[in-house]
Amino acid sequence: MIIAVDGPTASGKGTIARALAAHFGLPHLDTGLLYRAVGRRVALNGGDPDCEADALAACSFPDKMLTDPELRNEVSGGLASRVSVHPAVRRALFERQRGFATQVGGAVLDGRDIGTVIAPEADVKMFVTASIATRAARRFREMQEAGRDVTLEAIHADLATRDARDTGRKASPLVAADGAIRLDTSQINREEAIAEAMKLVEQARQRAG
Image (cartoon, rainbow, N blue to C red; front, side, top):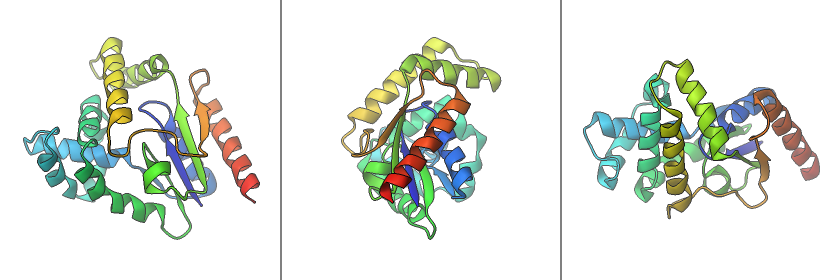
């Protein structure tokens, strides 16, 4: 079984995808980490994330880089959004994601184009969203708990910029896949979101027979 979970930053898609993977005993891939790794590698190389050649050159990062805690910060997130607009980068990372999705037994992947590009044949497609105010507040709390020095206003502005870039890019824009189950987490907490996602996935499986 392949489960595709898409949605914007801080919508809760990663938390939901991890919970679904654990529940169904499937491997999980946060595909956003691949783009964050490319963005961070560009920065470490002294390159320009807005330059396709620099971004493409950073796509050969080692797997161990995916465990770098720096990939979770806002800087890496912003860099990921910038390198992800390049078609060459998306092509370079496609096979890596596709191979994970089509492994024997299935998998859960979360990102922005899983149900539309990486695994359009997914058994279950989910699009997780939330208001930008809710997402900014969540990310702000995460950053505070991590000891990061950042303001709520700055995070809100950054998310707005990322949303515009992700939905407006020509290569694999952020959109809900045809037939995707929509889940808005604006008014529910983490546990409620996970429970609702599991219920929706089970219902989708039953309908599919």
